Image (cartoon, rainbow, N blue to C red):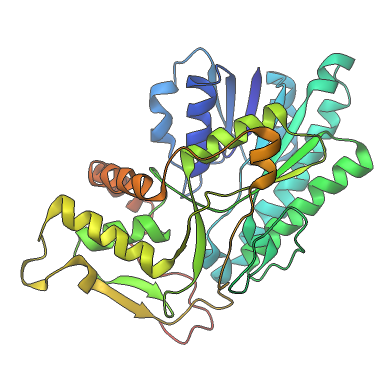
Length: 357
């Protein structure tokens, strides 16, 4: 099976490409613009692999998307390419509208054109898998979970653009018949995640002796999903998912942000001991900062459908996956240095309206 993956050099994309080649035995065409958050070095060992091709292209470029589909003739497209950091969407929403909305429209148009000209058997087997987020559903109260039937209620520019892309994908299925499947996942973490996100930012701030920023009271709750478990889920949904259906993918690991930060500090303390001189424990670096504007209070995913119908379940516990992630970052500080050369220095983003600089 040949699969074209948009955003294959991004955080989730890297894990998926590796899984598709090494585990599923698929051919992969990685289409990526290589923005600041891409990690092309993570796939360096695949550059000469017989089942891997890389194409640098922007999903907003209609001519390029049409050309690549005709050139590679994939059996499926997995659409991961997106601007994904909520804080950046607060500061610069235009890029999110362009990539997440216009880009999704553009790739859908190209896929519709390509799929409509496939011979009968190949057309029937073709799939377009659109990868989205639980943030499209907004914020939960103290109880309950998001199901596939949950009402859309996005609260950030990022979430709004992902919601718009979900609706476009459904419309292209219902109007034009494009064989689509949609997934909405919870918060991913693991190796190669760009350092602006909570978990890598906490690890790197701690080992460098810098303040670890925690928004508000730190009691915002997320359902955490190890990225390799997510990659496995996407593969099985692509193979077994029902056309036109949506599947929620979550790790079943609800944790408050402050508890995640403290767990990381404890893991670092065990691995590194007291490396802060007179400063004390890593937890002493925790610094509460003004909350993010429009910060959703709680997300929680009901993954019953994908577990029951598709047969997927996460293999990693939250604690084991955090330990693996901490160990990976500690042994890949050269990769962190390379990412910082692209302009991110560990600063807090998304400060518009937050009352702080």
